[in-house]
Length: 428
Image 1 (tube, rainbow, N blue to C red):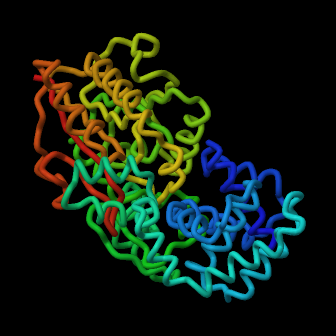
Image 2: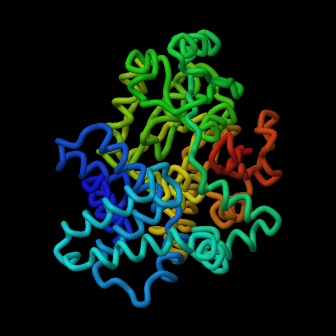
């Protein structure tokens, strides 16, 4: 456990220094190839857990310390220990003992064993009182930055607490069955045969009762199934694609919606993304599913002159860059890496992409604007502003919009799905 505690403390330190959690973990797996699957799983659990409840853990640690710990790695090691004492099933004395031993491995931790021992044991003695005190601060109560809490309280005054709570839960593992290869019920039966019971959520979606490693899913490597959140699966059916259509998937990587489009129709699909490395992931996903696109292009959706051939599209899926505020339970680092000042830049980028793609859409064609955000300025406000500027744009209300979607097109995160926004526009 000492090794996993130290590694997780380093991961958390790098993320809070500005690095993406997924990237930091991938770098660690490459540099520490001797880590066992169990150690990797433990490091990932500790890293995700501390970032998920970072606000609460920081508030508690502040109450336990008479003065700040100068060494950041030691500081984060204490957060790891507090997280384990609060949320893991490991026996408390084991957590404390290993954290004390781990501190000996830190250059600046020499002589700090007494501090680590005292802080963690004091937490155990005062746990209830400390939790109550930490909850007096909103960042300690909800484990989000204050600006995030304030924004949701303003935009969703009756729902903001439920939204914040949903973002701190473990996400479900939802599958999308490739119906070109197997019927949904047949794949569900296959899961049961492998002792992986799942609930049908409608369409091609199955939610596993218990998450498993992707590689263990029956038929995964043969392309029978993909892992995709239910909210993300709602998008493609809303676009109303029919065989023979010319379709653009803008901002396509990593390719989940690209593949979904191809699973539902025989279309001439162009998949576009501005990141060549991420486009490689699209290609790998399509190869695994035995699907192919008409074109796989590297280009900026906001600058079509650099990649567009001049032939207009019947349908466009615009899954635009956004704050990702609706998927923080899958990516808890987003809460602490995102800044309120980022919003203006994101909104401007989205506006530019919408205006640019609109020029490439056929008359009577449809464009589905999608974000994985729950912030109004990226969603309804963005669409309202666009319609005011585009007299030939009409906002449609699809009949198959998910029942839990709010009237403005906002899908809030809950136990079934992440948070998304959908707006279906038609060029008239």
